Length: 451
Image 1 (cartoon, rainbow, N blue to C red):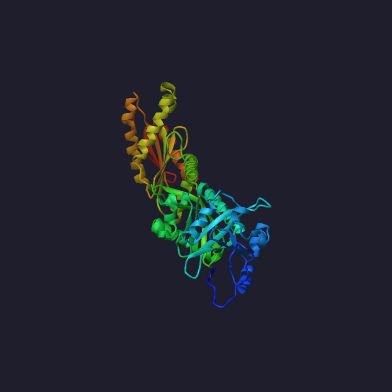
Image 2 (cartoon, rainbow, N blue to C red; image 1 turned 45 degrees about the vertical axis):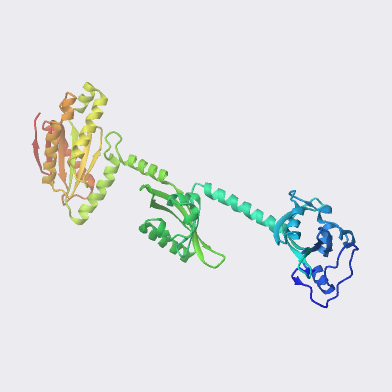
């Protein structure tokens, strides 16, 4: 018979049979080696009966060598999954196959299920005929348990990461993605397995990739995590906003990477923008409200003074607005205010600012505009309102009075310009309404259009 690793050397005497029904399996020097192996080593004859079992096998079976020899594996051990043990052995004993497989056995004394990795191969005589089988088994129960635990933890982690409401990724210092959860992959429009290995520049616009890479380099250099809001254009062309936490990571092979967790806050960002817009906007007319107008006007006033640039201000008040509300009702009055706002806005430049500063009062801030040009614009608006088609459709005539002024050398606060435009507006009212009055420093000139 052959040993597990090859032919028996010539001239080596064989041990006497340990059982009448068995054949000699192994020479004494080699038996000692097999007895001390940290594995279960056994051999059977063609009928599957043991002709050799090392001490580890005997301890597993709870029997002595004399009790084991001549009996089969099935006499002692029950397979955990009703496997056809005999059929496996026939593949070796009849067909000469070498079988390597995992198997689970129930230990008779304890009922414990243990897992083994077993290799079985045919034994052949000098003529090459199969005369039995030799097997080596390794107890991999603990290793298998650990592998199962790791697999379960990995599956659990994957389930958590794929269902967490955030983009989770790992990117190496070579700028290639090493991991992307399902949400991150969806953001790139690819299956997650196709994201891994790709450069950041292959998955996102180059400008965004370079911006993110500069931040990654800072994180890798400092070793500190970064928390910030980021923006990236989505596949639908819409700008999406994320709250991102990115941390440096040292891998087992010594290479460095960053791990990022980015939560999509686009809806929250848009809501914040909308709330800020509403805080700056008059709800009825859609133009700026008094508060945002004052903030913008003060900033423009300081800029104009610093660089000695012209700045004009126009105040507008709807004539007899109370009568409109009393005669036609507040919904009509609201429509009048919206129409006036639209009419004025349509005549302004992009950097001009229209605001509703009171019930029926509006102001127009005109940067880079001299008093003469502002007065001319007010005159056109005054004429346009008096003949506006929308008011004819309501069966009424609507006019407005205008007060115009400009920044002069003596102005130290925007309030001074605002007060001067208000005086000009009051003068227009006093002079009969539906007209424009302009005021410089202590002087005034008027022009108007009578009802």
